Length: 202
Image (cartoon, rainbow, N blue to C red):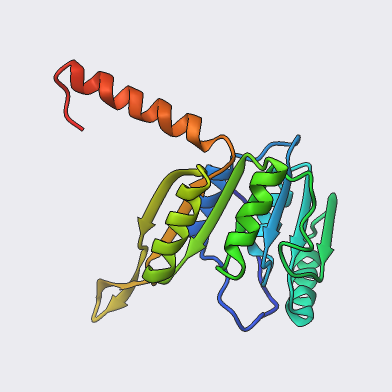
């Protein structure tokens, strides 16, 4: 994936490049998709989504951050069908999204309800706080939306006295699901059961 330039600061950390790589792999966007981001902030995720999805809608409740999104989109030469909305979710969400990403936890239960009502087949959410991750996982599960939960941490090397040491980013929890996740989860469970029947290990 091409590099993203973020010359304009939203005073809130963007989703890190390594995390975005996993995120976009899970979203698996195509030219037929309408992708929606809730809380666009610097626009990092939105910028990359415009390179894959046919349509992109970015919501940001803070006008100053939406302006940062707009400026960073322009700095990356983004073209195509993209709509920026100064709006709060779920009220500002479109009804025809195929994939949705929540970069924060504000109103996530109401957003998940909207996803169920409108049939969004891919819903991802990043969380950095353990307690919120637990509550959000239950919210996904209660709506039969949970496909996977990932926890990962990325460390970056730096020079220390002529050798390489590492500095770690804050751990990230990524919830992966959607309105068809229940069927996928059943399929995964069935496959594991077959493996155990053959003497395999889970």
